Structure formats: structure tokens, C-alpha cells
Amino acid sequence: MKRVRGLLQRIAPYTAAIVALLLLRSTGLAQTIDLVVYDLITTQRPAASGKDTPITLIGIEESDIQRFGWPIDDGLFCQGFDQLNASGVDVIGFDIYRDKGVGPDQQCLRDRFQNEPTLVSIFNVASGIGPVPGTPVERQSYNDLSLDADGILRRDLVHVTGQDEATVSFAMRVMEIATGDRSLREAMDAGRHEDAWLSANGGGYYNEVDAGLGLQTLLRFRDPWSYPLYSLAQLLDGEIPEDAIRDKIVLIGSTAPSLRDLFNVPQTRFTRSEEVFQVSGVEIHANRVATLLEHQDGSIQVGWIMPGWGNQMLLVLCIGLGALLGEAVPKLRRSVVLVLGLGAALTGGIGWLLWQQHVWVGMAMPITGLLSMGGAAWMRRGAMSQQHSQQIKQLLGQTTSPAVADQLWNQRDELLSNGRFDGRQLPITVLFTDTANFTSVSEGLSPRELMDWLNRGMEVCVPAVTRRGGMVNKFTGDGMLAVFGVPIEQDVQAEATAAIEAAQEIKAGLEKLNQQLQIDGEPAMRIRMGIHSGDALVGSMGSPERIEYAVIGDTVNCASRLESLDKQRHKGVLRVLLSSNTLDLLEPDFRKQLELENWGPMHVKGRDEPLDVHELKMDTAPEAPEATQP
Image (tube, rainbow, N blue to C red; front, top):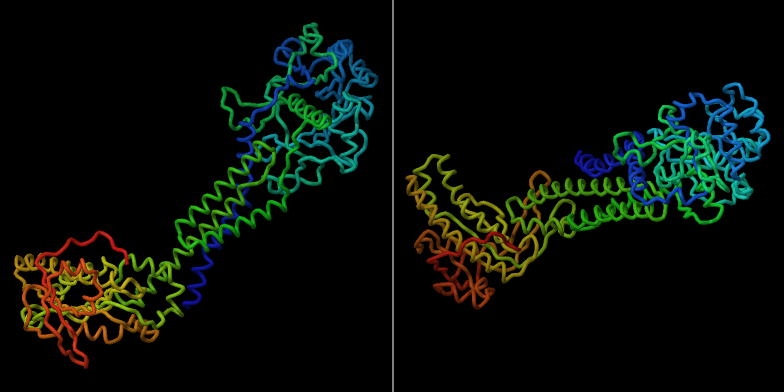
């Protein structure tokens, strides 16, 4: 059962992280995050002006509808075409559906499209709308646009290979007629043209792009409304400057909001105005034509889009890095800094690539994978830390200082074996206490009062030990056994000094306690203490049902014998006897500060060799330290 519980503690955080990643992907939230980031960067990136292109727009505006009505008579378009051709236009892209004629001059429009080599007609595959009747196939084109699931236009269906001559995109057809060059489309058909093509799960898309639909890329947006734009009325009234038409690509389409040929674009989300930021279809096509012209003359920065398999590899890499940095870095704080720093660097790097290089890499999944796996590792480590802390408390049996506990955690792999502390021989200093006149005191108190009385004494003694890195190994009825230097080997000089300082603090605490006990009408508390330094065997002892941290050896026995030595020779609230073993470890300057009474060599029970015994006299005691280092 413990193994199962331990296994669950290890895998549960990672299972939760994987579930979170799956939900992020399956719910579409990852794609939403990536698209929002893409829109933000696209909005903030400086864009070139449409005035720098050979493209002029003729828009059907609200004023044109008021003047000419809607749908506009075919004869008016015929007049406009004639004026444009007379001014020396390169090509006229007609982005208005006219599969069915309007007005009495329908035939003139069909004749123009049949005979004028500058005219390009549109049809729409998705809606089943045909081109202007009579238009030759070499001047027909589809104007289908691909909206994303959130209703924003980001992609351009540049070309569909393997189709008949009529099935060419509107932008491609206009560009080819204007330049007389079909090499770009031929290169696409042959698979020789390199571009930042979208694939399934490419960039920040997840199952959004139909890879079999054709060659798709991300739209390049010029500065909105920067193309030269004139109304149909201005064209018919001869008010358009000739240099805006001659040798230009002219696109005619709807710009009036009432005609609803407007599209939400990446800038829509982050541009605040009185009206919704939308771009007309004819300007979208102008952007497409301008991009193809840049491809043809080689002036475009092509960029790159991470393919789906690349996104998957990046995700796996980030998951591995998150788990590795979360688990392998010893210091938890450093691990957190490294994972968060790497996440920030990855976010900044991907954003910079998109901003400067038009390189689009999906960031939501890999960064979430990095952070979630790092977080899972931290949770697992926290759970294991708590488990180890409980285990250490169980093994040590009693309290130890926070500083020692930290070191225990950092060295747990070296110290613990199969849930136990291995037996080791360590140089230690032992502090042993016992309460004087306990029998006579107990006769005058009830069991509950006696226990409260003893605990008030322990509240003085225990903190004085643990604050200095010592460990209270066990309580011995009316006393305690405290050890300095376990379970991690420390500086023997520092441990001996810590024991003396603990004794000084205990004396000061007992004096204050006795003042309060006198007020409360309870017996005063007097304690005997023995301190001795030397080697001892330490480690876990017991069975699975009961186990404790044992400190065994002559050092422990000597401290106990010093405490019980000549009990009648006791003045004041605390009598401290210590051996020369401990005194010899102290720094000379510290030892000079101590008031000592030499009892001389004395034999103690169970030991052949005498101990050189000293009594520590204490008139005052130093203040307890706020923190300790073991």
C-alpha cells in the first residue's frame, strides 16, 4: 500500500500536467492563444504603404450606391472600363460578381470581358458563382478566401496545383496579366517555388488548415487604407489623375459597408475605434497582388512557418526540459528561476522571430509544456519533501533545528537508505539534563499539574538546543538527551560551543520561569546538566513497527553520569558539569569568558578512566540567537 501511495505521489503531478496539455490542445485554447499573439505582433509590426505599389483601387462607395443605385448597371461599368483602357491601364481586376447581368446593357459587359485582354473576371467555388459569361478561361479566376474559425482572415490561398486553366487565384491572374510572366505559377506547379507554406498543424494552427486545399500562406498586410482609392463616380466623371491609372494595376470592388464585403483581419482585435476595424475585399486582393509582385522581383522576406512535426518535436523538447530542470536542479528556487527564465526567453525568442523574420512557431503548447512539467516536478518534489520530512521526523524521533532539517533534505540521498539512517560513527557533543527533586515535587502535584509543570521546563530547554542546530534525541521522563553534531557531521568546535551557549540560555530561561512559577504558587524548577564530547555510534534502530534515531556509546553514558554526579552539590537553578573533552574543543577566547570550577578527576559509573570534571558557573546568560547555522 505504501508503494502504491508513493507511486501515485510521483506520477500524479505529471499526469495532471499531461491532462492539462491535452485539454489545452483539444479545446482549441492553444490555437486561440497563438492566434492572439500572431494578431498582436502583426498589428504592431510596421507595415509598408500601398502607395509604393503599382496598384490603384476603384471602390463602390456609399455615395456611388446613392447616385447609381444597386446593383449598378452593367453599362456604367462598360464606360469605366473604356476610360481605364484609354488611359493605358495594365490590367483591370473586376472583384464584383456578374454571372447574371444587370440593366439593359448586359451584352456590352460580356463583350468587354470576351474581347478586352486587360479584364479579369471572378468566380467563387464555395458559393457556386460563375464568372462573367463569355470570359475566356485565361482571364477567369477564383476569389475564394479562407476565414479562420474565429472569423478573422489571416491566410491566403495562393494557388491550387493540378487544376484547369480557369482555376487560378484572382491575385495570381491579375499579376500574370499585368506582368506577362507566368513563371511564378509554373514554379509552384512544379514544386520549385519556396515560400512559407502552411501545413496541417503548422505555425500556431491546430487542425485548422486543410493541407490538401492548396498552397496557403499567411497574408502580408500593407498599411490599411494606404492604396490610392477612388470612387466609381470619380472614374466616370474623369476625376482620377492619369498617372494613377497609366501602367497601373486597377482593382474594382465594393468598399461600402452596406455591401458587406468587409473582413476582420489581425488588426481588428487590437485596434480601437468608433467602428469595427475591417478591410474591404478589394484591398485584401490588393495586398495579395502586391505580395506576388514582391515574390516575382525577389524583394520579399519570405519567412518560414514551423511545420506540424516541428511543433511536436519542440513540444517534446520543452516537456523534457521542464521535467529535467524541475527535477535535476538541487535548489528549488534556482529550478524555478531557470524554468521561468527559459520560458520567458522562449516566448521572447519566438515573438522576435515572428516580428523580425516572419517566422511563425506555435508557442502556447511548448511553453505550457515547459511550465507545466516544471510545475509538476516542483509539486512532486514538494510532496516527496513532505514525505521525507515526515520520515526524518519519524526516524529522528524528536525535534531538530530548521537549519539541520534543510541539510538533511539536501543530503537525503546520502544519509537515508531504505527509509533508515545508516549506522555511522560521528564526533558529537551530548547535553543530558535531569530535574532535581522530581520525586518530592511530584508528591505535591496531580498528574496533570505535574505534566504541565514539566512541559513548562521543556519549553525553556528545547528551543535553546534547536536554535543552535542541536537535536533533542529523546525525553527521559523528567529530563532530556540533546545531541549536537547529528545526523550530519559538523564542526566539533562549533558544536561544543553551541552546547555551552544552550546551557547559558537554559539558565536564564529557568530564572524567568521560576519567577512565574512563584507567582503561580508552583514549585521552583531546578535542573542538573552534563555535557561531554566524543565519538558515538548513530543511526536508525528498531523494527518497521517502531523505529527511532539512536545515539549509542561512551560519550552518551559520560554525559548522563556527569549529570547525576554528586547530586547534593547543587546550587542555583541550573548545575552544569562538563568534561575536559568538551572544554578542550572550545576556542581559547571563548573559554576565557567562562567561569569554571575544577572538580578534578572523578570516576563515574561504568568507566575505568576518570573524567576531568568542571562546573560551569553562570551569573548572566547571553541572549538567544535569532537564527542558527549548524
